[in-house]
Length: 257
Figure 1 (cartoon, rainbow, N blue to C red):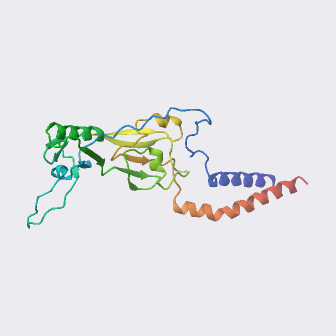
Figure 2: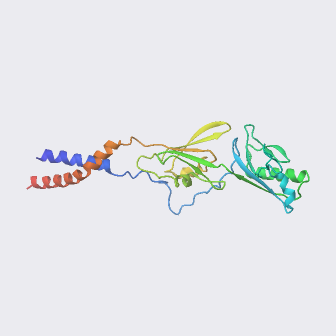
Figure 3: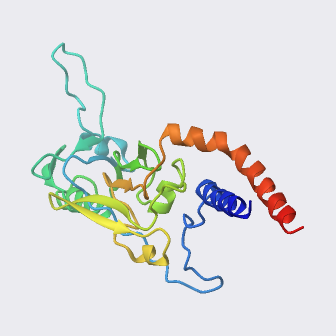
């Protein structure tokens, strides 16, 4: 009877452990309270081939700015006037065809650099004395795959960090590998994989803490995830575990009498 009770208790412990929720999928485990940590500013985005940018030119004299809007005065094959557009896609050579100024190479430049270049050229050529140029990214998207869902997240503004991206996903669970999240980034025509540890404050120093357009975040699985059949079996045995634990305790008490 004693041997039976010991084996029953061992089985209960093993099954209970397999059904428990691990405590090691928390974020930033090594960060201390009230301890300052350098907060680095988000780097400026640099434009890439196939990026879409919105460029608008303004002036106190409205008519002076109109020639710098694409499709003004143009017509389609049916003779109908085309709607003005301020959207440009960077071609494979890193260029855009900008009204009046012609071909501009903007790949690798920041949005501010593009703004200053266009404004400077407009002034230099004598079109507008004090132009106001607005440049914005139109296709700033982050792709998330793996243990936190599969989705493409549009980004408003010009900066976002990996914690903000993952906060918009389904969240971590006991099968999520937070110590080795992969970020795939295109750099100078090549894809490079970076690893980032979401459980360590070192993530703030990672080159991929602040994400860039077209980054892919792959949240890896941790260990083996039980099949649906195994999950169903474990759920069915949960009530039996409770009963078994109670019975094993009673048997041990009775054998000592």
